[in-house]
Amino acid sequence: MDEESTKAVVLAACIDIRQTARDAFGLAEGARACAIAGNGDGAVQILMDLETKLGDLQRLLDLAAFANRRLGRRPGQSAGRRSSC
Image (cartoon, rainbow, N blue to C red; front, side):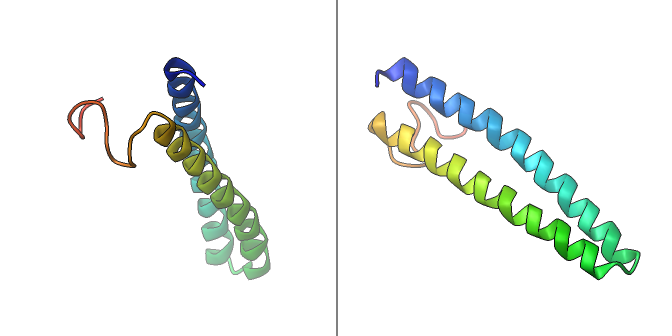
């Protein structure tokens, strides 16, 4: 995989991570609302869906880290300063 393709994979993973995190947050809010309303069973069912989203997030993070290693970088190491994009 060339550098441009690898960067495209990292970008796609970042986009998917953002959307999946938003979805996970929505599920957490739904579970919270159920729990507050006294529906513990409903909250747990929603949290089980949240568990799936969290697994998806981990796999996307693993993909981005793998692609970053293909560029010869360690996690947290960028081409320039760490905090800049």
